[in-house]
Amino acid sequence: AQSVAQPEDQVNVAEGNPLTVKCTYSVSGNPYLFWYVQYPNRGLQFLLKYITGDNLVKGSYGFEAEFNKSQTSFHLKKPSALVSDSALYFCAVRDVSWGKLQFGAGTQVVVTP
Amino acid sequence: GAGVSQSPSNKVTEKGKDVELRCDPISGHTALYWYRQSLGQGLEFLIYFQGNSAPDKSGLPSDRFSAERTGGSVSTLTIQRTQQEDSAVYLCASSSPRASGGRGETQYFGPGTRLLVL
Image 1 (cartoon, rainbow over the protein chains, first blue to last red):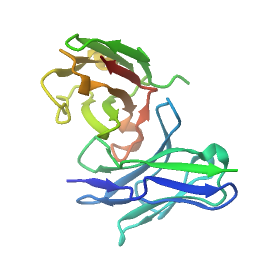
Image 2: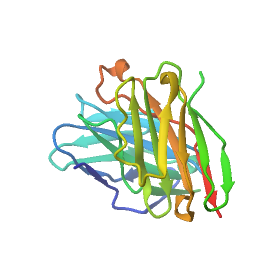
Image 3: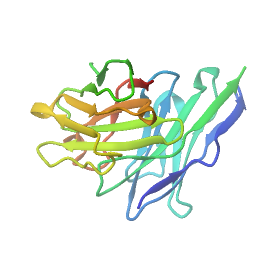
Image 4: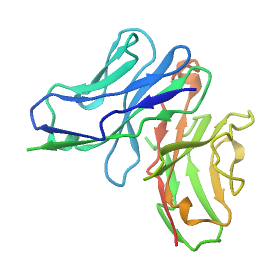
């Protein structure tokens, strides 16, 4: 069975500071890993994904994530957070043999001016 | 270009009534997914359609839930005899497995239908 954990319900960061949102996963075989962001009353917007290759993945809006196989982690990072980055962030994993995504519980990011 | 669209955006119904939720996927996407987002359960997979293959219904919570996909495009999620615990946001997503050789293609989500059962 596949699973995803986002250990932090909320992350608070001051604007201009680095932002990290943590994600760990469990899946048999090689994982496909995704980050999505959700703004209030909106659907999920795709940020980035890891399929294979370089462990550092760059995505939309200046976000990046690092795949760490030994630690089974896929943390989302942004060097300098903006107030507009305040939203709900979801990590998701897909097993190679399944179509569905398994989502973490989500992490609320609050960026203060 | 056009993304995934869902209708209605909001639906209020009375307990025991049937509801139908509609999803229009991105044109050309052969895979379509339904998920449910609720406060207590987070984001849950419901059902997955891929081309002409039999759908993966493993996430449907009860036999009151069903979905169909006509002509490989539009999908309808039907909830019969709605219960208050069905209140949630129902999200639809589509993807194109062919675009990535069937490996890790991105799912694109619609805005969701917010269902409230009174």
